[in-house]
Image: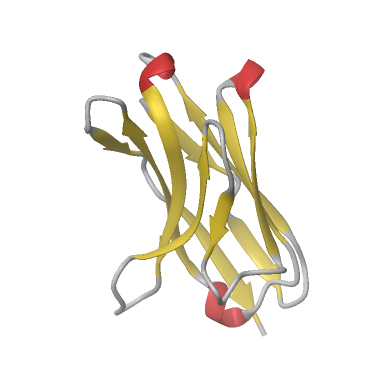
Length: 114
């Protein structure tokens, strides 16, 4: 299971940190990603992190967002700085497993006011 948290209402330029805590078959997870879905738009990838390897970011968030992991806590974080109104949306985390399966967490709402 995945538990996403950390969303909220902030003003443009402020920061938030989202958390995605995993439980269950943690050892089978090979990749964790954050997605977001703005009102009226399709869900889009924001950032991803492999168990061993590089991180990836959408062009729109590169330099402002940082994805990281704390293996001891089985948690992946998304540090979001210099937030913009266009970052508003529901943020979801997703994991990919060795067997090809994937799981989605419930969303956490981020609202950035101008």
